Image (cartoon, rainbow, N blue to C red):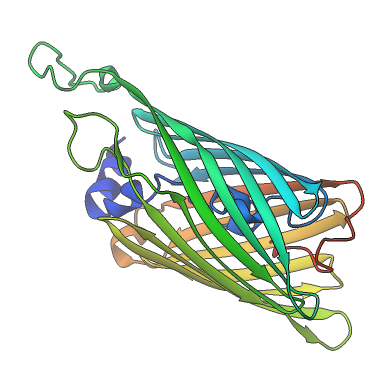
Length: 302
């Protein structure tokens, strides 16, 4: 508990910025933040991420995200996602449905446009605080609220590069009128890009960038690079705003099943002594054969 309070005081943005799911293996499950990815691979795709942040601290943040998407025919993609995010006394569950439409462009490239609709069920239970005294502080009562929301996004993909942008929440909704400004479903903006370079016959190099802006809080940037061999193994490194470093690994068991792992650590002197770490795993299943309308290369999965 003490360690968790220390990191919240030192870096309060790490809590506020996680209103939308915050994953190091974000490319495993891009439809969580961008509805345009739904159906982009032309197959049934099931993705699961599980993250344990600051794993050695009591009541540390834990996130589980599950999504399913499929190409529905006639350039249409459909998807659904469920996210469970818990930290300390707060828990939120986000459920959304995605719709995307593909616009064909020249040279085997494609532009996908998407819309997302759903909501966030937010719960906070101050009774778990040891010092909780409702008779002395009636404002700190249990809170439960559901906020509907909508979002939009685009995704452009070619054989050797891709870029995307999304706003998965367009409404800056309050969670409770009596809670201060940080208790909101804030507007998020995401910009991402990546490329793939072939080195010799079987080696690839994939630089990638993710920019995340939360209204009223600030921006976080992920900059990374992955090296791959024979479309079977990938090893990646990335750095994130706040002196956070991540090591990532991917193995494609076969063309339909992939496993990923990420290990995050703080490089800042203030936090390195606290030994805060994060572990994350990702799993992806692909079912069926790609449709003729799908892009030749799959979206940028980790």
